[in-house]
Length: 212
Image 1 (tube, rainbow, N blue to C red):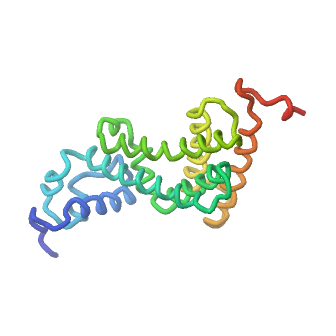
Image 2 (cartoon, rainbow, N blue to C red):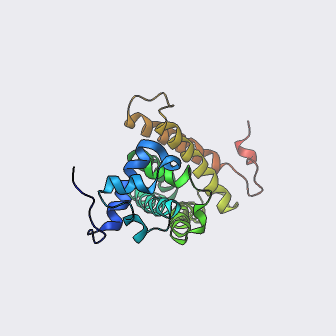
Image 3 (cartoon, one colour):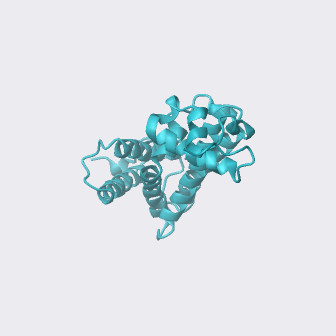
């Protein structure tokens, strides 16, 4: 059995982040310990304190990394879109793709976040990821594809839906046999939501033309 690496371990911070993700995958973000992270990273049990004051600060760093990956995933998924409303809908696929690819980050971001908002890196990366969604909503409004209602409310509505799909998919609670089936359902749901949102009146209700 090899001895723990000394404090000057190269790329220690990144090694600790990777080890933390592995530990989260095994026991979740609430049960993990810095000692176990150090063991997984093959460093001494005091080594994590060179970069992180405590467990919460390490979790905040993992979550921040997750938000950065989430933003990139949404942007990449929306690139093929032909118009602003399609980009909004397709970014939802990117959200679910991220969650299925990096469920440990997803857990750190949303299942253990009560005390993480005090960490600037976590708060900033979370705002930037949400801003990606807000920008897609804003573009669709400017293109006349979405009504001129509260932009944040529309973004929160879209986020709530894709987050729910992602959570169900990670828990294998959707009747889908493959990831592609999950993505097909995501496309259906985001398309249905987009069509519903286009029928909102500026006052927040349904447009009269959308009523039976």
